[in-house]
Amino acid sequence: MSSADQTLNLQPPPSPARASLGRRLAFLFRRRRDTLQFFADLARDNGDTTTFKGGRADFWFFTHPDAVRDVLVTQDEKFIKGPALRRTKRTLGEGLLTSEGDLHRRQRRLIQPALHPQRVATYADMMTAFARETADSWRANQEIDLHDQMMRLTLRIVAKTLFDSDVGADVETISHAMDISVGMFVRAMTPWGPLLNFLPLPSNFRFKRAWGQLQKTIEGFISERHASGAHKDDLLSRLLEATDTEGDGTGMSDKLLRDEMITLFTAGHETTANALTFTFYLLSQHRDVEDRLHAELGEVLGGRIPSAADVERLTYTRMVLAESMRLYPPAWAIGREPTEPCTIAGHEVPAGAVVLLSQWVTHRDPRWWPEPEKFDPERFSPTNRSTRPRWSYFPFGGGSRLCVGESFAWMEAILIIATLAQRWRMTYLDPQPPKLKPLITLRPATPIRMRLAGV
Ligand code: HEM
Image (cartoon, rainbow, N blue to C red; front, top):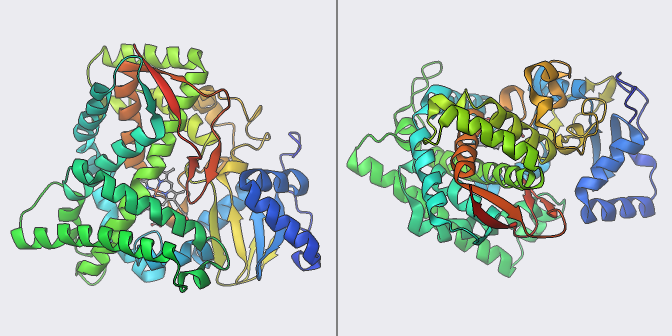
């Protein structure tokens, strides 16, 4: 990618059909061995648009912000989710992530108000209380696995938000179910995944047991709430009481409610935990940035616990988080399938193709991000933001499928960073940078070992 070329590359992409079997296999091997580098190489070698064959499908990989805008926003209605995510319906049912069309629009109308920024603000004190508990449990000179700690923290927060339940004791059970399911999501991303699901494999039995347990726990929460008739200040009560005033005036069935709860649970904690993990890792590698962050925390908070009202004032903290999600986007790729032929960035894309966008690649394009590997929160100052195309950065997706938890995630992550960083500095203990595992989310492949020191 040339940094001088700011225009859309309209060269016709190489035809996927022309590649020999040998080339296709080599291609597949490279893709599985180092997926992130594979996509980065495609962009480096082919420019803004690459087509390739994967299984029986023709893939179209677009990296230009205009193409991102076309797919996510302007021509949104011509697309459904890609095949990998569609296969997760087996687990996620008809939750927001996987549903389509009228059902998706209706469910979105019912759920969105419960995650509106004003509603989200009411969760702030709970978020900081849990973050404080984590900070209190740490000791100077202790070694922690940061990713594990962040997963536990965000899991407790999302469970409290959804069911007003402190899953402290159940964390192990729920984490176990989630871990096993991630393995199944990975399988869902392969063309032969659905076949394997029907074989009597131990992994299938393990998954069935763990997922069944999770479903039972969630169904238990729902029936308890029906039985007690209590109104609680959580998403479960809000969704039980929500009716579709723009549609048929009714609410959602218990089965849909269960699917939505599991979807919010799944989508709502690992992404944020990954963002926090990479943010603290980056801070440990850039003490100058960390010092500036501490200076802001001192000025705005002066040692007190942050509240919802502080989130707007913590502008540098927000810039640090934004830059961390540029370099390590928790959702690193988005897949779609056009249901009718469409023109994206000047290319005729047939119905049934798989269209791929990648935050990992577009967020590192030197045309919009000079010295892309450099961690520099200044890129997100108001002046610098205005110099880039809007869709050169899309950690939360966009259009009708924009992350419904975006406000929740910003508030949660900023409050956690502010609470933990006021108390602790971390030193990264491994000589190498973290290895990455791009599954549904981009997570570290191994524990992130940190040594703690009091501030
Ligand atoms: C840093 C944290 C997060 C990131 C980076 C993130 C990213 C994303 C992205 C990129 C999408 C769009 C996927 C697509 O278009 O195919 C999405 C959708 C979604 N996210 Fe998030 N997310 C985060 C946190 C959350 C939280 C905290 C919740 C819930 C409380 C949540 C719930 C959802 C749901 C339900 C959808 C599906 C929305 C729909 O299709 O209508 N996410 N997220």
